[in-house]
Structures are given as structure tokens and as C-alpha cells.
Amino acid sequence: MPEYEVLEPNFKDVLLETMKTKAPFWTLLGMELVDVKKGWAKVRLPFDKKLTHPLGIAHGGAIFSPADSAIAMALMGLVKEDEIFTTVEMKLNYLKSFAKGEITAEANIIHKGNTIALGEVEVKNSKGIIIAKGLATYMIMKK
Image 1 (cartoon, rainbow, N blue to C red):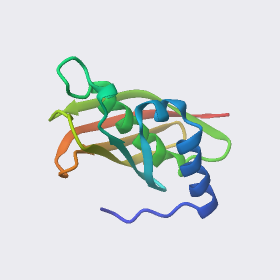
Image 2: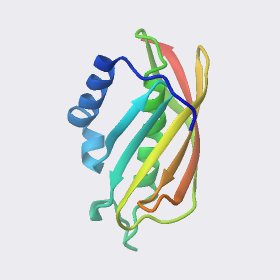
Image 3: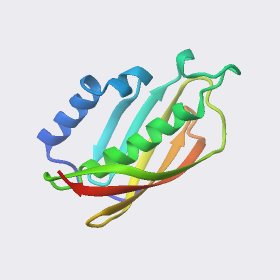
């Protein structure tokens, strides 16, 4: 893994706390921001029955959510204070199912321009096996 610049400690602490306490969707799913740097992030999601479809494995959206969120968190440390961003397109290839343990989505930003950012993500299970791989485009805008 390439070296990523660490975030200012205060910014990182606020981001970690915000995602833990003020992100209702993250809480609903059980996602946790494990670590974040400029251009890199890791999000964890433990398996829970509430994530499953009738076959007992996690719904694709439960895998997609930490993947998208990890890329967004990787981008957080690269945007300016007067900028916001949103996902405009994301593709995720599912390779294996998720039915126990936990998954981690590890993402990095491939390109960040003035208006567009491109990120990639690997989602791995508890054994370190890739279960999904994705690519996302984000639009960067002034607040």
C-alpha cells in the first residue's frame, strides 16, 4: 500500500466521532470508520441478520454501502473547507457472498480534480478474501 498523508489530528478525531455518533445510516447498518488518511480510508461492517435477504446472506446494498462510504471518507481529507461532494456513479463487482464475520472496505482516491474525483475500493471478508471490487466517481462542488 502506498504511503498516505495523515490527516490533522483534530480533523481526524472529529471525523471519526461524527461518523460514530451523527451518521444515522451508518448506525442503522452498523458501519464503523476504522481509519482515514488523505486519499485513503477503511470502513468495517460486522455481519448482522438485519442485513440479509431471504437466502440468509447479506443484501448487495449492505456490501455497497461501506464500499461507497469508504471512498467518500478517503476523499474527505482531500477536499477544501468550502467544498462538498456527492457520488454520481459507482460500479461494484460482487465476487463472493457475505454471511458471517465482518467485511472491511478499503478505498483510495485515484484522481482528484477541481470538479471530479475517482476512487477505487476493495471489500474483503474476515479471512482477507476480496468479495467485491468497485470504482466510483464523485462530483465536487462549492458549498
